[in-house]
Length: 267
Image (cartoon, rainbow, N blue to C red; front, side, top):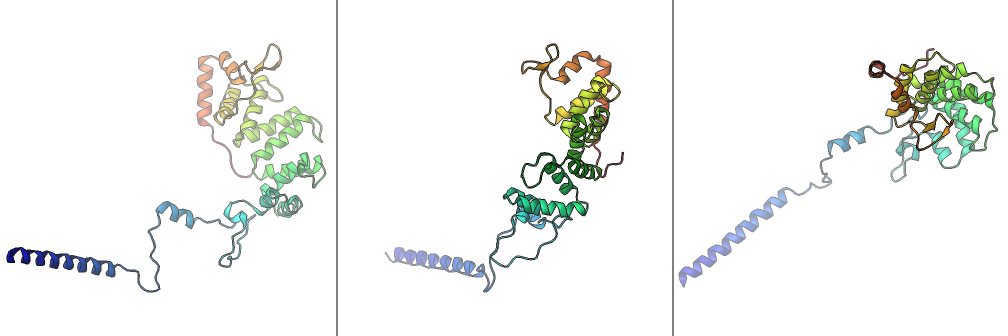
C-alpha cells in the first residue's frame, strides 16, 4: 500500500509540474500591453493593399478620409468621378465633368462626350453630330480604338457628314489595328470584297481571325438569298472554303505577325 500511495503522489506532482510549465509558456506568448496581435498578411493581399488607387490625370489624389468615413465610391471601384456621376444618374454632373476634362485633353472624356452627342442616351445634351464627330476624332487621335470605330461608322452611314466608304474603311482599319474586335470584322468584310479599299482576301482572313479570337464572328449570312440566316455559315467560314492551302498558310503567317498598335494615332 505504501508503494501505491507514493506512486499516486508522484503522479499528482508530475501533473502539477506539467500544468505549471504550460501556464508559463502561455504567459510568455501573451501580447504586450498596448500592442495588437496581428496575423501575417498573405503576399497577394499585401500586394493588393500596396497597389491602392493611384492618382491619374482624370482621378487626382484625394485627401485622407477621417477615421470611420467611407472612401468615395470611385476610389474603391477604380472608376472616375465622371463615370460614378453617370452610374448614379447624375448625368448633368457627368457631362459637366467630361466637358471640363475633354478641354484638358482627356481621351476617355472625349470619347464619352462623342457618344453622348451621337445618341443622347442621358437626355442631358441634344444630339449634335458635328460635336460628336469632333469629340470622337479627338479621342481617336489620342489613341482610343472605340472612337476610331465610331468615326468609321459616321462615314459609313453618312451621319452628319457625306457618306464616304473609303473613309469608313480607313477608320475601321485604324480601329482594327488597335485591336478593336468589331473594327477588325467590319474592315475584313470590306477588304474581302474591295469595298472602299483594295481587295485582299488573305488580309480579310487575317482580320476575320483576329475578330473571332475575341469572340466576334459576325452574323450568319445566306449569300444566295442575301439575308441573315442562323443556319448559314459566318463570313470567315465561307472565306476559308474559297482560299487555297497556300493562301491560308499566308494568312496564318500574317496573323502570327500581328501586333496591336498603341498610343496616339499617327496616320
